[in-house]
Length: 93
Ligand SMILES: [Zn+2]
Ligand SMILES: [Zn+2]
Ligand SMILES: [Zn+2]
Image (tube, rainbow, N blue to C red; front, side, top):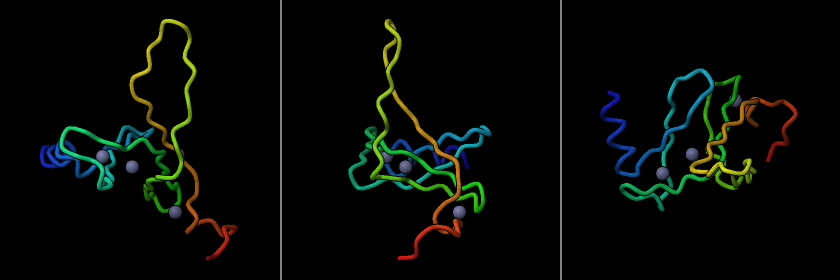
């Protein structure tokens, strides 16, 4: 099972979403992901109510300022909270 999913990741079909509880989640990639090259620089949102993971494509990963001597490689942002479907305060559209 794991090996199959990893093959999909390698082919640019799905991408990995890290979670705080060490489980691994996957999300479908957009069309601009290719084999060996991903463009998934967006924030991920995990709803603590329905346990769904969302790709927030419009939210760009914030700049991280590192101390001198540290070189940045890859930034992964996962936001936990309540999604708009589960939030009774969210506006209906
Ligand atoms: Zn991707
Ligand atoms: Zn939810
Ligand atoms: Zn994503």
